[in-house]
Image 1 (spheres, rainbow, N blue to C red):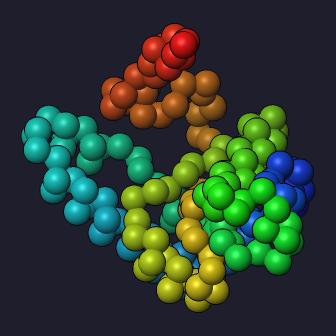
Image 2 (image 1 turned 135 degrees about the vertical axis):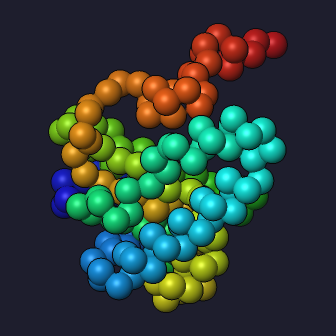
Length: 177
């Protein structure tokens, strides 16, 4: 696990602010509380699916592995870090969050290189999670990561394999002016 944190620490960050904050969730009670919260959010989201077939598919997806993952890491971005002395973010404060996402990306690539899988859980209420983990008010939730070895390694994302959404061609994402 330390290897993944070391990789994250090498990520670029605006003004060298290093705003990422990692909470390793070790408490079984907090893990259960988090899983129950996410299950409730999944159920709420399912009810909002207007197409019955899409709702059925949604409910069949594995949307989190909070109970099963060997490691859970909750990632926050500190919007008032002391490091960096505000360099580079005066006009674009959101770059702190971007920097934190770069740390997650660096962690993700390091994990992938070692055959470790990461799942990014986003069906949750950020304020509930922040309160649950009792973190400083300056920390904004970015991700809940389920980390472990996948049952079936694949280069194709599970949502694509299960028919939720295919990856679209990169050519559709490039604009020239």
